[in-house]
Length: 431
Image (tube, rainbow, N blue to C red):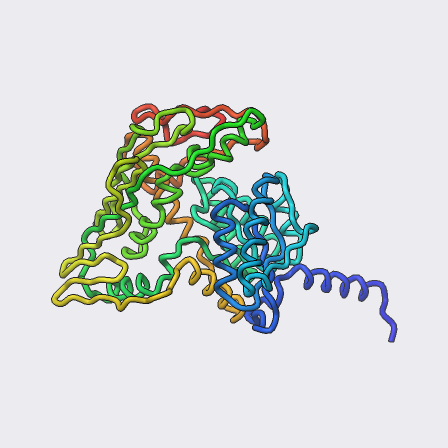
């Protein structure tokens, strides 16, 4: 049998295309006998935590590649994993990282994606999530991405596009909104949707707590490195704490109401974290959201020491109420039975891997981007001091990341000022 040049070129192109596709994609899945190879991009606290959860969740998964901007963070994560490996035989057999597959620097994410990983964990500061998600889907990788997945409208639009591309390629995207994978939340909200408390009239969502970590600046750090080491305190990097943290509760509100809000009115400020070491974010927010049904959601979040801590949700219906997690009070009281040992941080990884193996990959990209936009809508209402509609937000040019990104000088924008801060702004405009 002879093959002419044209046939050879066509066959070679087809083979190259097949090699670029995710393993056993398009409805076939990955058999239980085959390991799912995991890489992590971003080796801070959440990245290392997500790796532990992923390796705990499923059998026959292995960590094979790691990447971080900073060498010391990568080294610290490897040391943590090596210690776990000495203490836990099951963890040890899932650790397959070699020095050749550890990467640092601005392009570390590209190097991780160029390895043979099947699934990548994205856990860098949130500002980079849209870029890394786009690159991961282009490289035909399944994705677990920590929330929030965007900090501005430009990032959300990018996540929408990448999520659609993932769906076309039969790739999974699961986000770090673990309440969506908590069986108690799932059952309780299903009952709310089935009418257990009647039409939902209103809800309250809260994330009130004390302060978080802060790292003193070192002389050798550039402006950008200092901001990235303390990314929580810079809106371009974190989205502010209403986006970075409170998005969990706002995601529950959207889930209960099966919609995103159409308008937000809000206030916030900076009372207890006023030093330059805390960047320029607020330390408290209070937002009222209006939803298409007419329901109102009151949102509160703060990070202030010495204050009352409360994290949770409350839902009011025409016939009763619920905490959205495990209790409904209407004509009678229903409580979800306790689930000892259930960890939703592990469950989300278990669900992700199961969907990949079954060839029915989950895709939560658009949904979590909408929840992040809900938080951004509230933030912008507080920053500007104006009522802002969803349509106004989506029509804005809100794009707050420094461009081009480089590890060098980087001025801190001023603290947002209601009545002066504008919705249509970019980082380069100085807010």
